[in-house]
Amino acid sequence: MKRQLIVIISIGMSMGAVAALPSYRCERLRVKADDLDVRPAAVNSRGEIVGTVRPDAPPDAIAYRWGKNLGASRLTRRKRESYASALNDAGQVVGTAVRKDGRVGALTWVDGVELELQDLPGPHRNSYAFGVNNAGQIAGKSLAGGKRWHAVVWDQGSIVELVDPNDEQDSDARHINDDGLIVGVRTVDEFHSHATSWDHGVMTDLGVLDGGARSVASASNSHGLIVGISNIAGGEPWLYRAVAWRSGVITDLGLLTGAQAGYASAVNDTGTIVGASEAFPASRTAVVWFDGAPGPVDLNSLLIEGGCTAADGSSVKLEWAAGVNRHGQIAAYGVAEKSIGFRLTPQ
Image (cartoon, rainbow, N blue to C red; front, side, top):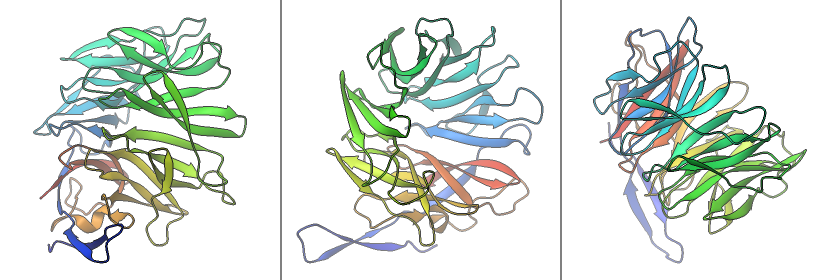
């Protein structure tokens, strides 16, 4: 396949620079039964992927990991619902599972050993882990006093609340980068919730697009670029746009032609952002934004000959890109009756 070209116009320059978009080789994330629902969540710098497999029989979801060579391994052995959310470059995985007593609790897997993470005190102890950095710090949320979800970070085995213990608003931490910058969301009132960052104890409301009511920050890179979603004025509250925050300024990342909604799920240190555009009622497309490029690019248009295929060889359209590593590898999935996961590697 020929490499596509885009024109990048540098601010303050009258001439344009031409840059080639990468092509991607697509590899399917295999499990023992090819008809299971597979949804990847993240990819690390070694090309290892974690995500969730949904079998036809209980438990309803099983946390899985795919190694560098895409060998699949189940992270939980007991028959209980579990989810893998993220992993770092050392292979430490974080996620959530139903514990022996029936509570939902945050977990980490280190060198194959499963460890339960501490909960905030209270009559109803539940927690979720969403992100982990290369120092092993984990971001998530835990019930505070059994009433409100509070954003937390686990550091060296201890849990730390990121908001005042008496905060009456819900919050959660979705991602933590290697500089310790944490991003997520905090409720403002009954009708408003705003993307929020926590930078070494300093909490910042990142705001929304003009007139919007809700935003969520999903990830950040080592340069402080934060990505996520925000709704807009005059639209349905569930119609989100993919956005980025740089130096506190929010920017709408744009949509594919014909789409009404967009989502940004992850970003790497080169500024490559991945996510999806959606044209209702039910047409979602995995997309990528390249640093300096004008708007999203359909990931399906960048696949090398043969594209992404199911076990029977049929073509699969990529609908969601969940993660991207520093080498530009992408974890994504498409749907052909059930979700099928893939790893995309730039060529």
